[in-house]
Image 1: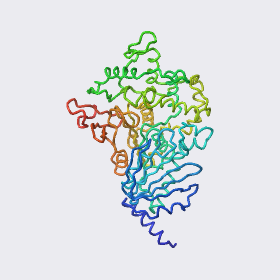
Image 2: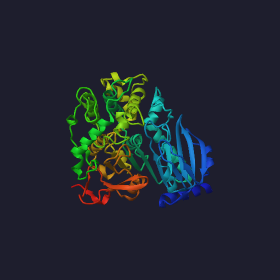
Image 3: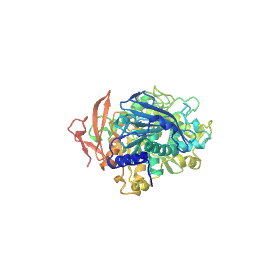
Length: 510
C-alpha cells in the first residue's frame, strides 16, 4: 500500500502527539476549513488571529488571548451552531464549555485556556436566545432534544474531527466543564455518551428539570399568589430576620463566628419560632403568616403523591445579595420578578405542556408524574449508574455551593449518594465537593475559586485524585481568604487558634 507524503507526515505527527503529548503545530491553514467536507456540517466562518481581546458579555468577563489561534464557526445539522478555537501551538488537549440557563449562545468560560494551548469549543445547543425564555422550544421537538443532550454530543464529535484535521492528530485528552445547565450537560455526557470525555467537571448541576420547575412553581404559588400582579410576599427584611436566626442557632457549630456554615445539613431549625406580626401587618422584625408559609416553602421538601420530588434548600446566608432575593424572593433591585419565576414558568409552558398561556396560579400538581415523563426523557440526567463512564476510565468532579439559591445542594448530594449505593468504588472516579457559603456556581462570602481544569487534568493524566482542594475568595483581584474542601462526606474544621482566613488553620473533621 502506498502513502502520500502528506499522509506519512500526518501519521508521524499523530505518533508524536499521542506518544509524547508535546506541542503540536497546526498542519492546515485556518481559511481552508471552509472547504472541508464533513457530513451534515457547514463551516461558515474562519478567522485567524495573532492575539485578541474578547469583549465581556452577560456570560463572561473580558478575555485576553495572547497567542495565535484560528476560530471556526459553523452549523451542525439544521441549526446547532458551534465555535471552535484552535491555537497555533496545541498542547494535545480539547476543552468544551457548558451553557447556562436555556443556552442559545456561546457561553464559553474556557477561552483563557487557548493561550495555554488548549483547543476550546462551545455550542448554542441548537437555538438562538431571543430574550423570550424557552419560547424557542414551542412545538419544536428537534430543538428540545438538541437542548436536552444531542447538541453537546454532536458538537463534541465534530470538534474532535476538526481538531484531527487541524493538527493531523486526534486529541490526546478531552474535557468538559460546565455549571448550572452546564453541570447538567456534564452529567448527561457521563451518562449517555461516556466515551466522549476523559474528564468532566459538573458544577451545581441542573439535572432534573421538571423537579426543579415544580419546586419553583410551589414557591411561586406562596410568594406570588397572584400570577397577574406578581407582588412578592417575602421581603428583604424577612430574609435578614431568617439569616440572623440561622446564624444565632447554627453558626458556632464549626467554631467560627462568620455565618458561613460548614455543615448546613446539620442546622436543624424551626422557622415557626420566628416572631409573628400581629394581624396581617408586615413588620421589620417579624413575619406575617403568609410570609412564614412562603419562607418555609423554600426550605421544606416538595412531595407529590407521597414521593419526594425536590429536597428543599439548606439554610445559611439567606440575606446575601444576588442570592435568595434574586432567585426566589424577587426582592433584588436587579430583577423583578424572580429568576425562579422566569425559569419555572418557561419550563412548564414550553417544555412540559406546550402551552404559552399556562398559568401556575391554578396548578395543583395532580398530573405531575404523567405530564412530565416525556420532558424528563430528554432533559433529565438522573441516571445514577455510572458504570459505563467508569469502564471508559473517565473521571468526574462534582461541586456545589452549599448556599446555592438556584439549585439545591441537597439534590446533588442525593444524586451522588444514590450513585454511591450502586457503586461502592465510586470515589475512585467520581468525587463531590460542597463549598460552604457559596451561591450559584460562585459568589457569596465563601471560598469559590479554583482551577478546575488543573484539578481534572491532574486526576486524568497524572492519577492525582483530588483529596484536599484549596479554594480561594478573591475581591478586586486580591485573595482575601483560602479554605480547604475535602471530598464529600469529609468536612473541613477550624483548628480553633489559627487565622480563619488561611486554609492552614483548617483540618479534616474527625
